[in-house]
Length: 475
Image (cartoon, rainbow, N blue to C red; front, side):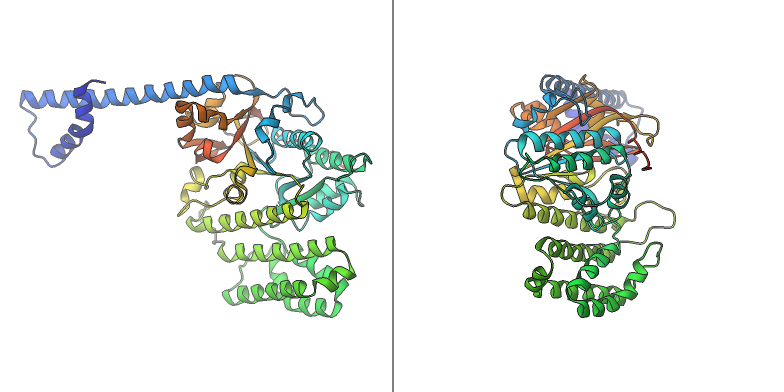
C-alpha cells in the first residue's frame, strides 16, 4: 500500500466523513472530486490488503499444521494404540488431562474419549476418569466398575444424567473399566467419577436423599430430624416443580444444608467407624453437591417469555463451573499423590476461556468456566485438549464451520482425523499470532469466540461428526 493510501486511511477518511455529515463540503470543485476518489481508492485498497493479509496468515497456519498434525487412524476403543503414542510427549508428567467434546450425543468424541482413556491408563498410569454427569447419580457406576452389583444397562440408565447416557460408547467405557479392574495383574484399580451437580447442571433432590439415607444408618435420630426439616423443600425441588423458591424459602434451605454439613463434619470419626471412610466421603460430597446446586439455584434467572438466554444467566453458568471445579479437586484428592485424572466434558466447560460469542452474546458479561478454574489451580500440570469438526452428519443438529473460524481452517489441513499440539506454535511467531487471535469454534448451529492457543493446549480435529450409537436394550 502506498504512502497516499496510508495517509487517507489514518486521517483523511475520518475528516472526509466529518465534513460530509456536517454539510460543510461542496461537491463541485475538481480538487474535491479528486479527494473523494483518492479516499475511496484508499479505503478499498485497505480492505483488499487486510483480506489478503488475513488469508496469508491463515495459509501460514495451515502449512504449519500440515507439518505438525498427528493423524489418528481410528477413534474406536479396541483399535491399535500406535497412533496415540505421540501423546506421551504432549502430556508429559501432567497430573490432569481434560478432553472436550464438540457436542453431547456424538459418536466420535465419546469413542475417542474411551480410546484416549485406555491409552492414559495402560501406558501413562492414569487412575481415574471424571465425566460431565451428575455426581449424586454416579455412585452406581463407581461401585459397578469396581466389581459391584448391577448390570451395564441398569447403571447406564440410572448413573448417567447429562447427554444421552444409554449409548454404546458409554457402555464400552464402563465395561472396559470393570474388565480392567477384574484383572488381578492390575494392582491399582481405575475409578469412575462424575463432577456435575446433577441432571446436567440442573441439580437433583437425589443429593439430599443420598445424604439422608446415609445419616439414617449412622445416626437415625439426627437423620429423622433433618429429613423433617428438609421435606418441604425437597417436595418443591422434585421433578416437574417449576415454581422457584421464595427468598425466605431459599434462606431456610441454605441454612438446613449448612446444619447437615456441620453435623457430618462434627461427627465424622463416629460415622466413619460405623460405616466406612468411602461411604462417609460420598455422603459428605453429596451434601456439598446439594450446597452447590442451591447456590446455583439462587442466581438462576427466570427464562424470558420469548425464549433465549437471559442476560444474567452468566451467573448460573459460572456457579456451575465453580462447582464442577471443586468436584474435580475432590476427585484428585481422593486419588492421592500418585493419582492422575482424565476429565471429560463439553468444550464449553474444559476450555481455558470465558464463554462468549454466538448465543452467549446475550450475556451481560462472559461466564467463567471449569477450564479456567483448573488452569489456575494446576497450571502446567494440566493439559487441555479441545475438539473441532467441519460438519455434522444426518441425525445431528444442522451446523457448519464459520468461514475463517478454527474448524473451517483445520478442515483444510488434510487428514480426516488428527491431533495438533498448539504449544509447538510458540516457536513460529506468525503462527503463534494467528492462534492468539479470537476465532469462532463451532457448536452445532452456534459458536464460541476464543483464542485457540489460550483456550487449549491441543486440538482433536474430526472432519464429520455422527450421532452416538444407542446401546441395545437388555433382555
